[in-house]
Image (cartoon, rainbow, N blue to C red; front, side):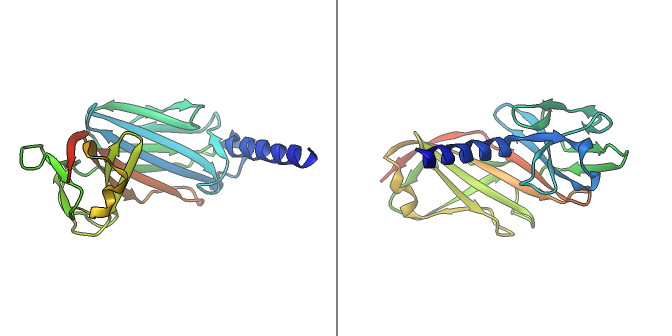
Length: 227
């Protein structure tokens, strides 16, 4: 019983620690780690901006900015969401975003995060509305060009509770290869498919560093999985 109680206490303590947050004014301002994401969802034609702050690294404690600090997207103050320990802002359409961060000592860090074109699943016709379970296939994306350095694309395929993610980060790539064995977990029938394109962005940050990403999510298409 004592062993069980000890294990439970350790589990609870670990959970509480991982969810803790503190104010950025309580630490050395050079130890603020920044994480910026801009996400465009084609199905709703909207861009979402996310800013997260950590202590020292991407695994550090969550930080809420102090009263003298500020985070803005395109000049508009971002809103703090305590549930996700992050600041948020969103707007209609696909637009690049300028993010401005001022720490509690008045130091300014400005960053411009840019999208590339959305990698879209091919417009469905009678010639490409099916995938085949017994053969290797190359699935090209429409609209976006070949991959450049610091870019990668995920092909997401979903059937009921089964999800397959195939990635390609090869410079010059224009699509994703699907091996025949990939579909072993799927049944014949409908599959939902879409592309997600990611761009890694270098940031101007405090000494602790940071991470920036721009992501586009294409409209989901439904195709048939056949033998």
